[in-house]
Image 1 (cartoon, rainbow, N blue to C red):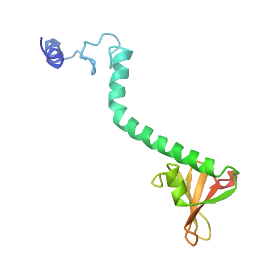
Image 2 (cartoon, rainbow, N blue to C red):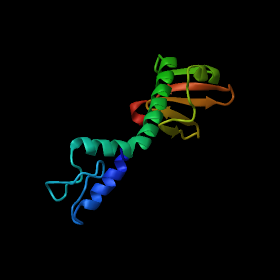
Image 3 (cartoon, rainbow, N blue to C red):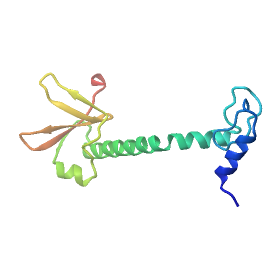
Image 4 (cartoon, one colour):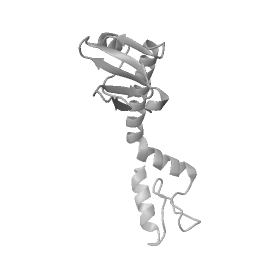
Amino acid sequence: MGNGSTVQTNFRLMLKPNQKTCPECGEKLIGRVDKKFCSDQCRNSFNNKLNSDSTNLVRNINNILRKNRRVLEELNKKGSKTIVSKDILLLKGFNFTYHTHTYTTQKGYKYFFCYEQGYLFLEDKNQYLLVTQRDEEK
């Protein structure tokens, strides 16, 4: 039995030059002149394959950001300010590489945020100040 792609290639060669084919399965398109796929299944399958690599990357980064937010929220239960060590953050699975945004104060202190949960490195104490962003800072 032959290879499926060979069959599709041979099928395409039998079509008239002005006939369009489905980019997913190679079937002849019947219907509207601007039709691109023969079915919803082929359209979904084609687009899922097209977006799978970038979707996985975005999904993985969003998972890290959500975990970072949960860790900060768990450690800063009061919702005001809490001081913790880097070791505690790392033990909880915090990833310092990813954050959603930063906020720099007039004095030059740079806060890193995962959504509304943030932290500031306190150099003199070698610890982190955990904060929750207020509405007027957003």
